[in-house]
Amino acid sequence: MLDKDSIKDLRRALEKLDSSFAALPEWSSSVPGAERIPEMLEAVAEGLHDNFPYFHPLYAGQMLKPPHPVARLAYSLAQWINPNNHALDGGRASSAMEKEAVAQLAKMFQWGDHLGHLTSGGTMANLEALWAAGQLKPSKTVLASEQAHYTHKRISGVLQLPFEAVRCDQRGRIDVEALAVRLAKGDVGTVVATMGTTATGSVDPLPEILALRTKYDFRVHCDAAYGGYFVLAANLVEETRIALKCMKEADSIVIDPHKHGLQPYGCGCVLFRDPGVGRLYKHNSPYTYFSSKELHLGEISLECSRPGAAAVALWATQRLLPLEKGGEFAKSLQQCRDAAMEFYRSLAADPRFFVGPAPELDIVVFAPTAKSVSKASGLTRRIFETCGEQNLHLAVAELPVDLFEAKLAQMERDQAALSCLRSVLMKPEHLEWIPRIWEILSRATDEVLERA
Image (cartoon, rainbow, N blue to C red; front, side, top):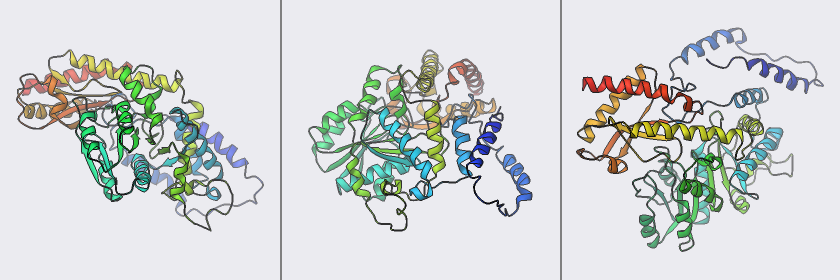
């Protein structure tokens, strides 16, 4: 089931790349252990057997989306050069590709002038955004919701910035009233708006957060690592659509091309609306930036050496599938959203299950009906294991009971957290596979309930 036919495309491209160096004198490298490479690759293939089938539609668990073939091939092709996108001297062509690809991401959020670059992932991208915020609002508190990614608290600790979590509403979004109360106390430098939480895909109410910014002086950072690309989707509920559209008013945005952007790990991106933020990065490296008066990406990045191959892969993917509403890429996002809604409706109509917040993006959380939260949690884990035995791979999440309050009916609340099942339906193929996924889930649930 793995794509093997595209290897011939890589070979043709490699020959074309090789021809560009034809003027160099003949030379052959000495490769230690070359004769044992086939043996080592066989060992690698054998070792990789111990994996979930992340590429298959029956993998509907964690946020693992297969890279597009063009991204995988472009990344591989660049490895023969192995560019370093720190200074132009180490990655001239790939740096140009990075600037172009990042500008396309900024344009997706309706930003023309901007400052931005790729990173190793969302964690590093968020670190840079909060680092800049800390430079501009020194010693001020960072606020994020209880459902925001744990990395914000961790990063704030690294940066020695105070951090506080703000409670969520029953949809897993930051509670605006609680946020307003905390802002009124003062000393807040940054509010993180999560545009697609990793647990439920909930989108924080950005318009209300921006309205509070007019009263209180703080920066707005959008962690759109997961949900940012959905700004292109045409099938969201109006409230979510408006919230994502408002990201253009934020001070900084993080998005992860290695999630919905069809890229290999790791590829994150940090964007700043004000290019003047670049002054914060100013440093001196006389042996690094000598080859050009143009901007070197290392001059606007906390990371030094960075893989140019990641930029090449992203550039190729976005050239093949432009980031535009109504385009092929946008339609694939809409299929993911449709899959989540179809799955959610099936779950909500079945008395064997109760569901969490209605999905805003493409993540669904649910649990089996039981007499108590603890019993539901136990059934969840058994259904998870039984589904896995039948090649349907879901995920388990520990979430506050409050997120399910409206659906619990007479269930005993004997613990504060619920172990629930979670599906991230981020492959467009999931839409046509929902009947098969439902069939396996239904069968596995019956088996578990019969044994209970």
